[in-house]
Image (cartoon, rainbow, N blue to C red):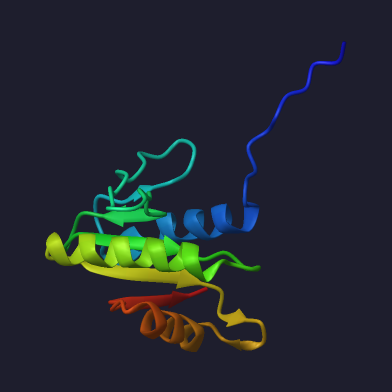
Length: 132
């Protein structure tokens, strides 16, 4: 009988973006960086009314900053809306900010514009958009 093991699906591009930001944020003056990566202290799970999500990155200073990384490739708007609304609310409650990290270009369009359109659609305020 064959034994089958199931490997968790790892989004290599998303992981690379998280790693890049985890290394960049301290250089940009952020402290207490936590990242959803092996070997790093992971950000706390944020509990929502419908679903719970873990931010890709979190910084404690100069103020609480919740960061969500959108990897290249297709994303479900429903999933993004759920995450962004939760992180935006958590940032507001903590007196902090919600930031988004995404590719510089998304489907041939400026990533920052895409993020702004999604934010407007789902009703969230983004403190800063990191286009990498």
